[in-house]
Amino acid sequence: MGGFRGREQQGNFFIMGRLSKRELLTEKKTESKKKKQTMKKKLFKTRLLSFAAFCGLALAFASCANEDVAQSTTGTNNKNDKSLTTFVAGDEAKTRTSMDYTSGDFYWEAGDKIYVKDDDGTWQVSSNAPTSKVASFQFKVPGKFNNSATYKVYYPGKNSSNDQVTISATQTQTTPNTTKHFGESGDCGTADATGTIGGGVFNFRLDHQAAILVFQPYTSNIVLKDCYLTKIEVTSNNDITDTYTLDPVSGELSGTGNGKQIILTTLGSGSYAYGFPLTNTSANVTTNGAYMVIKPGTHTLKVRYWVQDLVTGIEGTITRNLSTFNYAKNTYYDMTANLDVKDYDGDHYYMWDAKKQYWDGWEWTKNLSGGQPTLEGNTSSNYAQNNTDPRYYNESYPGFGLNNPATYSCAIAPNVNEMVWYAVKGDPRWDNTELWTTMGHLYNGGFWIKKKANITGFRDDIAPDGIDYRSQGYTNNWSTSTTPPSSADIGNYFYIPALGDYAAGTLYTVGRETDIWSSSGYPMDTSGNSAYSLSISRGNIGINTIPRSMGCRVMAFE
Image 1 (cartoon, rainbow, N blue to C red):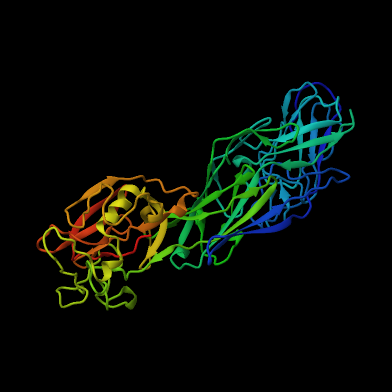
Image 2 (tube, rainbow, N blue to C red):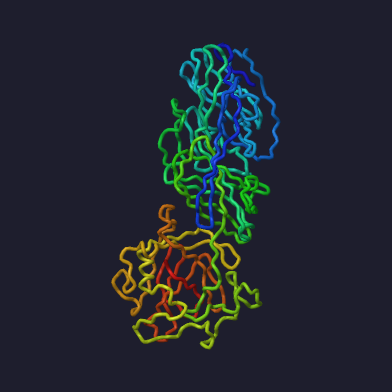
C-alpha cells in the first residue's frame, strides 16, 4: 500500500465484516392470460460481527456464478501506520463489493474507493484501491480521525465523489451475469462507522442506496432463438437516473432528478460481440443475465428488449409494460421475461373483396414449388388471372358517384369515411422498433392508431370534414408522429404492421409500407378497377385508390 504524507496520528481502522444469506420473495406480474413477467425481490441483510460489519460497500455485484476467486487477504490490520487511517475490509467471504449471483458472495473490484469527512470537516478519499478482483482490502485514508467515536462513510460509485452520486442513463455490461459495471453505473452506499474516541478502530455496516434490476429473458420462438439481445431500455413514469446527494442523516439518495430512461447496452467482444444469446427456453442468469442500477422508488416501468437478427439485419424491440411497483434500496429484482412476438399469417392478403385469399391453394406453409413468396422481391405466377378464379377481385360497379360497398372478404373492413377518421383523428404513430414475424421471418415497422372508442365524434356515414366519400372521390396523405404511445396510453391504441403487398405475384415493402383494403370501392372509376385503401409508411398515412388486383391485407379495425 502506498504511503501518504500528513500529520502524525495513530492508525485507525474502519472494518467491514460478513454479509448474511439473501432472502428471496417473488413478485408476479401478469402480462396477459398466457404471458407473464416475474420479479423476484432479493434482500441483502447484514449483521455486525465482533470484528466488523458490512452490508455490501461499493456493490458492483460480481460476475459469473462460476467464477472462482481465492479467499485471501491483501493486507493486515496494522495499527502502527502513523500517516493514514486504515479502513479494513475483512477476509470474510461476503464482505466485498461485487457479487456472485448464485452464492451471494461479495468481492472487491478494481478502483473501489471510499470517502469520509475528517475531524476538520474536510472530505478525504482513500488513497489506494484494488487493482483487480480480490477477497479483501485495506483502504488507507488521509486526515485526522481522533475526535469522534462515529464517522459517516460514503461510497458514491466510481464516477462520483464525496456525497454526490450519478446513476448513469447509459450503462454497459459486456458479458452475461457480470456486475463489474455497477461502480460506473451508479451503485452507492453509506455507513455509520463507530468505535472509541482515539481508539483507532471503527466498525461499520454499509447500506446500498440503489435498486438493482436483473433481467433474464428467454424464448421458445424459433425465429428469436437465432437472435441476440443488444440492449435493454427501461422507461419510468418518474426519475430513475440523475445526480443525487447521499443524505448525511438517513444515508439515502436525496434530490429530484429528471432522467426517466436508462439504456443498458449488452455488446461485448468475442462470442458476445453481437450481444447476449437468446438460446435458452427458461430464465438463466448465466446465459444472458443483465444487471441495471436504478434509483429506488415507486415506478411504473416500460421495458423494451432490443433484439437483432444477424441474417436479415433487422433490429427491434419486444416491449413489456409493468404495473406500478415499489423498488426498494439495497435490493435486487429478478426480471424474467418470456420473449415472444406477434406472428401474422400469410393468409389475409386478398384482391379487393375476393371470395378467397390471394394464395389460396398455394400457401407458403405447403412448401410448394411456385408457392406463395415469403421474402421481398420473390415472385410466383400462381395467383388469380381472371374472374373465373374465386381469388379474383369483386368487379361490382353500380355507377359513377354511387356507394359501392364490399360484400365478401372486405366487408369486415372499415369504409372510406371510417378510415379517414382513423387517419385524421386517431393520432397515428409510426413504430419502427416493435418486432413481429410473418411467414417465418423477423420484421419491424407499423402504426399505432387509436381505437374507435377513443376517437371523439367517430361515425361511418361521413368523414371528419362532414363529407361522405363513399360516393365522392378523395385521396390525401398526412405526416405523423414517429414516437410510439407511452406505456400509460398504449391500451388506447391498436397496431397495424407494415406487412407489404403483392403486385402481380411479387411481394413488396415488408416492414416499410402496406395498404389495408377498405370496404369501399372507388366511386369515380368507371372501369370499376380500383378501390379505397389505407396506405401507411414511415411517418405517413393516407387514403388512396389502388387497383383491385393488388394483393393487400384485409382486417377489421378496433
